[in-house]
Image (tube, rainbow, N blue to C red; front, top):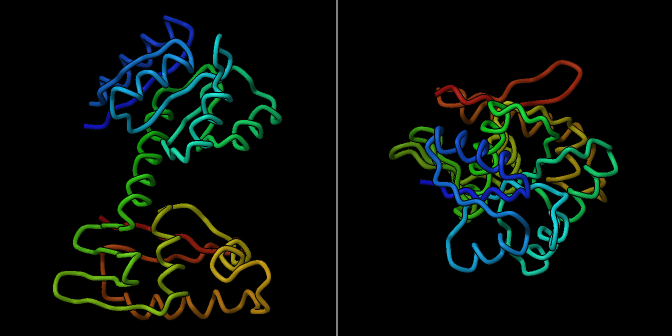
Length: 224
């Protein structure tokens, strides 16, 4: 059972968020500002925070900055009436993981929370599981039942990146910069070559597929 901390100085907003989240099966604790939220975290384990920005005593920016300065990687979803791009940029610069503007679409919020929790699990466990398929970051292996393949580092990192964000389209340049590094002399064509190798390796595996998106790049699709 995931434990979510809702931090907002508006009592009605806290009640609404709590009702929505508990209705989706989460355990919920609320706080009225950043200082109270830190006190909650001192006594309880929290898996994710849904955080307002404009609050007394300690606002959302300061709360996030405080956590990140202490190397606390708690997933944070900022939810704010602030809609300017500068406000969103500031949120990401201090360390938030995602940002939504009020009024909040609660269905979208639940989807974003699920995505953040899934990514946090991937980061902490350094594994991705898709049915019987397991990608193990530490050993650079992909296994399925008794079958186990150890991949070259770049191939593994490419597949791990795509499957960390199923359905998300990545351009060749994005993948090139992240996997090979911005200073690499290797051309983006090498991404295409590595994608081809991955497809060949796992063409008989029904759990996932790497799809080309014409004119854009690639995405991984989970089939189960």
